[in-house]
Image 1 (cartoon, protein in one colour):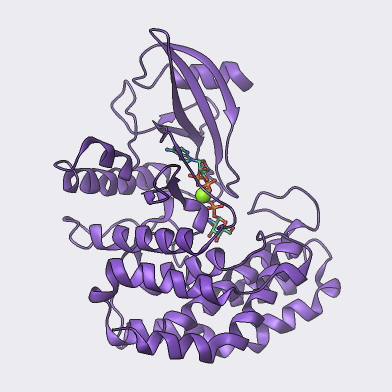
Image 2 (cartoon, rainbow, N blue to C red):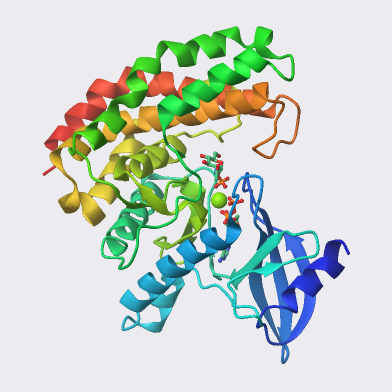
Length: 367
Ligand code: ADP
Ligand code: GN1
Ligand code: MG
C-alpha cells in the first residue's frame, strides 16, 4: 500500500469521524513526514495532521508518544478552565481503536494524528520583533507549564541530544571514517568546529556543579515549532514535541536565538543574508524573560547569550557531520544541502561572537 491508500488506511485506525477526502504533504520539517488530511464530516471539511515518526531518529516511538501524551494532558489539565479558544494552546492527539496514541503500519512504521490548529501557522523566518517576542514567550511558558509535571523522569527520546562535546566527537569520528569521501573539501568547516571545542562543555559543567538545574525542556525550539495565531499574532501552540525530555532551559533559549534572529533561512546559500539581528535577540530575550525569567537561576541568566552561540555551533556541527556521513540523518533536497546549512550556521556563530559583548550587557540589565 502506498500514497493516499496507505494514509486512508492509517486514518481508518484512528478515532476520526467522517469520510477521508485527501492527504497532502505539509510543513518543512527535517525529520518526520507530515501530512494534512481532510475529512468530510457531515458536509464540513475538517483537517487533521498525520505524521509518520522517523524511526531512524527516534528508536522507541511508543516512548516518544508516552512522553508527549503526558505533556499534552498536563497542559490541557492546566488550561481546562480557560475560555474555549485556549484549547488551541496544546497539541491534541487522537487515539487509535486499539487505544494507543499511535498506529503501526505493516512496514513497522509508527503514525500519529492530531487535531489541526486552524487560523494559525509557523514561520521559517520570523517577520518582526513582535513575532520574535511572542515565539520566545510561548516557549518560556511551555517550560513553566511543565515545571510541575508529576510522575517519573521522562524518557530520553534521543540520549545526549544536546551534549555538544559528544557532537564534536561524532564529527571527529565522521572525519576519520570519511564515508562519503567529502572530508578533504570541508577542512575549513572542520577547523571552525575544532577551534571552539573547549567551549562546548561549559553548560554541562555548570549542570554538574548544580548551578543550572535539569528541567523538562522542549529541546527543538526552532521558531517554526510555534504556531502563531493569524489574527492576534500570539504564539499559541508549541508543536514538534518528540524531544520534550529532561534538559536545560539554556538549550531551549539558545535554539530560539539560533532560529529566530537569523533573517535568512537556515539553508540560505547567500551568506551575506546570514547574521544575528540584534533587535530580534532583544525581543526574544524580553519574551522569554516575561514568561519564565523569574524561575531562572543566576547562572542560567548569565549564560543566555552564550547558549545561542553554543546551540548554533552544535547544529552547524551536526549538519557537517551528516554531510560527511553521506546525509543519513536530516532530510536533504540536494547533495550539498547539509554543507550549505552548516556554512549558514557557522556564519551565524561568527555574527553572535561579534555581538556577544552587546548581548551580555543587555542581559545583565534585565531585572
Ligand atoms: P517535524 O518534526 O518534521 O519538524 P512538525 O511536528 O514540526 O514536524 O510539523 C511540521 C509542520 O506541520 C509544522 O512546521 C507546522 O507548520 C505544521 N503543523 C504541525 N502540527 C500542526 C497542527 N496541529 N496544526 C497545524 N499545523 C501543524
Ligand atoms: C530538526 O524536526 P525539525 O526540523 O524541527 C532536528 C533539530 C535541528 C533542526 C535543524 C530530532 O528539527 O534538532 O535543530 O532539524 N530535530 C531532531 O533545522 O534531530
Ligand atoms: Mg518541526
